[in-house]
Length: 166
Image 1 (tube, rainbow, N blue to C red):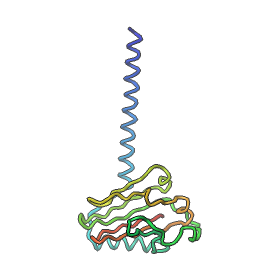
Image 2: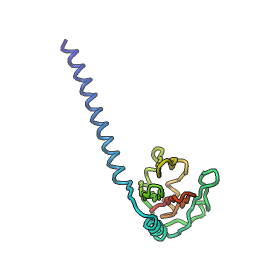
Image 3: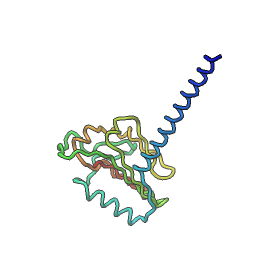
Image 4: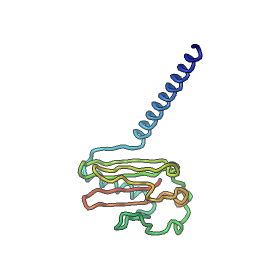
């Protein structure tokens, strides 16, 4: 009888530990999202100024990639042809304008996280997610070329997306 009680307590202890780990993982995820994604309501003029400030801060305002007609990323110029930069970027940043909701979305992701897992970001209401894996970004090459504008995508509805490293 004592042996059966011991097993029950062991199972309860394991389940309790799993619950604590689950709560800690959820808390860590919420913390990460709150620290790396910000949304603000703003006017289109203020959003345009934000986009201009980002492109002005980059060494080359021309994007390295563009989306083709099939919406697949295509290099405008090969990364291997770009010079090596002394500055190593640490962050992949996103700035998106949603004209329907008048929202400016800012997101940042440590560059080392590109190596782990598959990332998807949904930008704007009722839009397909931005699939970071589909972009086929090579973090080693991105670190070699330094801070750069990767994408500047403008949609027919007025939405805009910048993706860059810094």
